[in-house]
Length: 95
Image 1 (cartoon, helix red, strand yellow):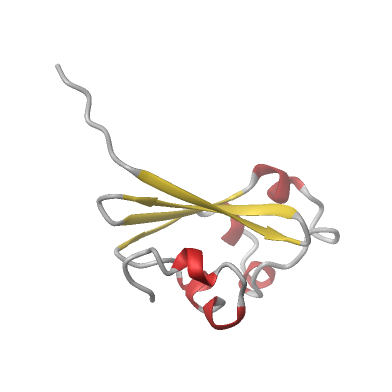
Image 2: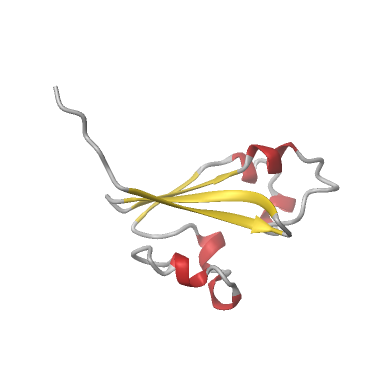
C-alpha cells in the first residue's frame, strides 16, 4: 500500500507579536484557518481582538474555518491594507 502525499503551505498570523492563527493551504485547493491554543487560552479581557465577530460569537475562535478555492472571509476583508497580503495572494481565490 502506498502513502498519499499532498503539498501544504502555511502562514502564521500575528497581532502585536502574538501568534493568533495559522492558515494552511493544501495543494487540492482547501484552505484551513485555525486559531492558536495560546491565543484561545488568554483571558478575553487581555486577548487582542482579531475580528469584531469574536466579540459577538463567543465560539467563533474555536471553529475551524475550511474553504475550498477561497480563503476565509475574515482574511479577505483584511487584504487591502496588511503587510502579509503578498503571501496570501499565493492562494488561488479570494472571497
